[in-house]
Image 1 (cartoon, chains in turn cyan, yellow):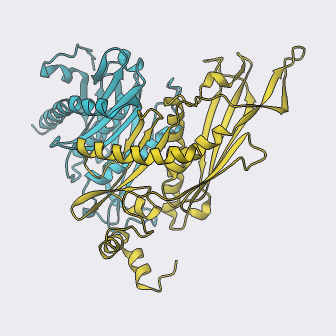
Image 2 (tube, rainbow over the protein chains, first blue to last red):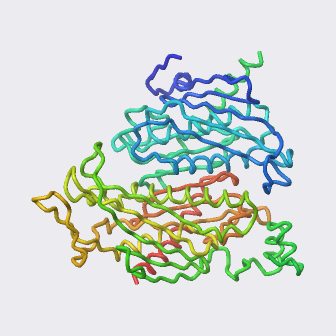
Image 3 (tube, helix red, strand yellow):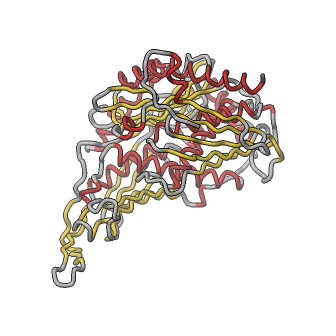
Length: 229
Length: 282
């Protein structure tokens, strides 16, 4: 897979060079996907609705079990195992709210998502994880209310708000936003923002992020069409 | 739990339905008597632990949290010779696990996520500068251990822990440490206490909103109890600094939001945190 870090222009084609995807790289799983966003690469696999192993409290809906594994030995000063748990909990709420869990009572799905490469900061990896998760669920044909896409945005000290930032820019900034949009693009499903900013910046960030999310949905459609043709 | 009366039975079967009928019957007031945007009373107690360098106990209604700050001397890592370490740990005793096995695991996960959130806030808001924890570059630094013991979890642990942290930091004083020039070992003078240097300007405080769907509209419940957190569609955390800048927004998925709702929540959060700050400065 060759990476080309092209300049962000108004051209629609430019963001597709920073997105790559392989569907069903793991043939044994019900659904799996590998997704690349700029310099981050994630793989996710899903084992479809199966029997509930423990006496858990999911009597009338699907039980979701997510495990996230970060890349061991990565040089982030702030990465600990508790950060993995935070990401897992956040992704679990995403799955619960988009998958039609009422259709599978007393069943369980297991999702294992792992980060294979992350050269940039937290925003890109979070967005990459969300998008990988969505592609995996689409690949596994789980009934979902809507597809979702995540967009990372950073607030660079000199260049302002940048969407889908390049590694150099991301490492230079401390404030980032990750928005998860659903396919009609009217509303934000989830978000995680950290740093120091005000509501105006947040509003600008959402307006920048929406068209990018639209292009990511187009990318999903392209990839799935390739698979089905 | 006793299932002898109708109300308890209804709560056990479907908490959300019970909550909705309560709201219908009692004119939009929550089971503990508050309106949607009202917060619980806050009680503060500081410097209660004699063996910690700083401590505080906070009660938000029934939620009780004890924050204790201690330190250990350690060698700095080779990557940054001037930085100390900070570790935040949130502990919820097993007595809080009132339900099935699965629930206990979820409680453990909640603690870990909360610990990580708090650590992120400390770093991002620059509340404690790691360089301030340095005693001698390359040789000795402080390793700050911030523990939160939740004695009772009645919802909204995030706000209470952050509030407790702010109070505890105000009353933290570290013993002076001098390095003995002959043996290169640190000498700790426990009687000579110096107040801890941290960034007083930033006082990150959090507002947790539970988003609940009632009568086809999303209602924002400020300072949710544990029942409200369970029935909420999603939970929104806003952490604001002293200058009203936002330090962290974390929204779990569930209720789709438009930009206007974010603005609404921001104004609610700002008012709530203003109240909290007044309490903090009393």
